[in-house]
Image (cartoon, rainbow, N blue to C red; front, top):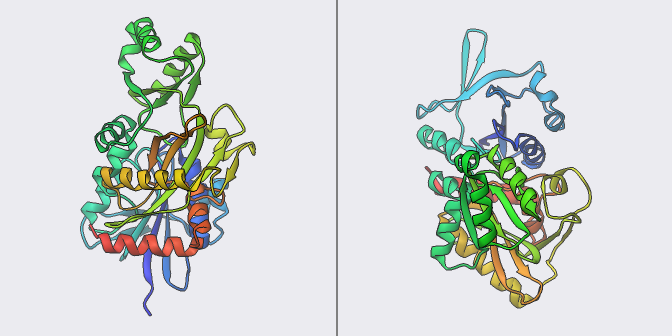
Length: 356
């Protein structure tokens, strides 16, 4: 049987570059090489595209992949039918690509930009298409869609970074009139908790807004929800299905970047420590959010379940969730009975089914 050609995209010009390298290492190690001819295509922080010529994928998170002697400069052509181009001296090598698996987190990879290139190229790809990717990446747009879908979520307010230079005090006062402390402050367009802060007083709120403004011109401020952090993996095109629910106990003030990827303070509970009835409400809400945004392929949908009333509150959606060895998306479907390599098989099948 002829192998499918799969291009795994990783790295990228994004604050989440390092997370992408870890995710790609796991994906590349779990793709069945008897089924797929794999092309690992990395994008450096400077924007160089490199076809990785090695087979030791542990070089990715170490950063040493960029200097492998077998590397070649490469690019995905936007011209339909050309596929993957790599360059050897004065020669151009063209490879037909059946599916692209973009293991790119955050800006320039998860926000519709890469999806637009792949649409023009006519190459099927894993994950939501352009519009859904763009909406899900911008937390303020996500909030509007989720409001319209009728799914409960935390109260929120948009702050523009341009307001902070001349109107910081007014902005702080307005937020204090709207919300009680603590408040959560997030850049509208990052994932992996990059630039996210929990502000317990006015000075912390000022610092949190300034921090978020480094990453995005739109800043989301939300009320604090006192509850368990629940995550659900969703997979599918027209008839998406939800995994069992998982729970994250960050072991820190909140589930920030360090708790996710650096320290070992966080603990995952699969299944989540909630009743079957509440879990079913969460799973139904996850599919509703997924469908309302127009996702296909995959996404991870995150919620809070309040301690006092077991109220289900939407938090956010991630259209290219982490795929590291400890990431919740693969773990949730593994716990639902689908092994990691089979998850990848199904995502590739869904990409082909969806087309471009």
